[in-house]
Image 1 (cartoon, chains in turn green, purple):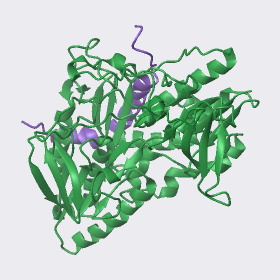
Image 2 (spheres, rainbow over the protein chains, first blue to last red):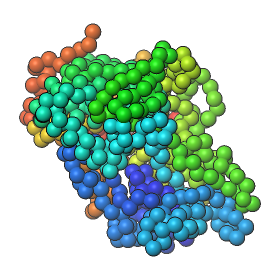
Image 3 (cartoon, rainbow over the protein chains, first blue to last red):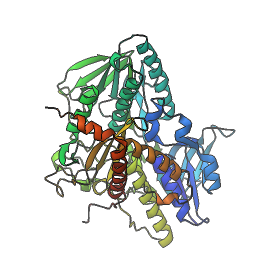
Image 4 (cartoon, rainbow over the protein chains, first blue to last red):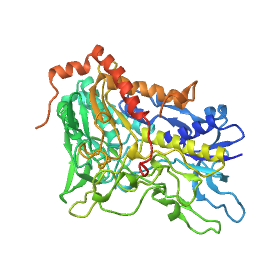
Length: 485
Length: 44
């Protein structure tokens, strides 16, 4: 009998737990430890942020589902890692602290045979002075509560615009090393469309602010893509959309400080600038959770498990951009020091960024961090679950399932406006996620055909269809496993 | 110079009948890219 502990119940953690439970017999124990009581379909947060969906539409409580599916669930947060146990506990364990109910504050040693760290990112608002959801007129759509607060503020602003107030809206990244530009891109287009629907578009000046070097970088160094019968760069496509929507843009901007209605940023030229706004949605930087790890004797071994995020089978050797390769990226998401610990999704430490790193004249790193959200999270979580199942069933440590982001496709179905007949979406697929310049030297590291983009109403329908399909899947309803990650 | 979305292109982008077929095409294409498999990069 084996006990698998999954930390986190986001996309990666929930995918891993559900596949483990489906494929392993009941004699094996699957335990989910997560401080969040709800599962949320994060990609639909942007629709909560424009008032087109309520939080209840994108979430469901985990406890009843896990009870029904025989998954042990502890609503607790991980405190520290003990991969060798300690003087009293011979098995490896996680020290977890309950966050709700009668047990709130109680700590428990949760032992395991296999550990999946799917804790995702810490939303590191503190890294940017003054950046905090709901303060200084800045908002976030990273969680459903943030998104709902953003909508309340935006709704208030729309009322002011209807009363004749001219406004400035700023949407983008709130740190020099933020990732998830895709979410901000979706939000700015949705906000723009909502203003048109409310007939106040002419009352707002909308500006995109980003740490990208080019529009459409998305933390993936941009892409060359098929667009209908043409071949187009992603920056050309995004520029075309922004021009069409009357959205202005500020690039190469490392936001360093936020005051009430004023954002301070540094550019690659080394200039320090300010931008005023009445409403802002800025994506924070993501960081690890700052977990500590200890060996059997209680010695600090944090650096064996973490470098911000969790260390996995990537090549972390520092090297210049010109020497980066897809082989640097992990394939199995297994920690090299402890073969029974894995970190899929955002929880793994990337070897480096995907976009070319750039420093300002003052030495500030202004480079998008690599995205690992959504689809890659699900795919890597499933392959980790499959490898653990293989290890249990064959009683060995061989890993047969591999999935490097350098040999994996991803789809980004970005909403560009909500509405059954008036909605729009920007559908982009990329293969591979990390460009392979050796394999595809003439097409900027990507395979054309599998890397394509299109804009239109179908994209909105597809995003909506994915919303319902993935919530169905997450609820583990009949044949859920037929829906790919 | 920035490309612009032409009137004809906008019509095709928002026409529900054209977009219905585009939806079918897109769903299949996305499925092929995403469910088309993945693997390692070090031993290929």
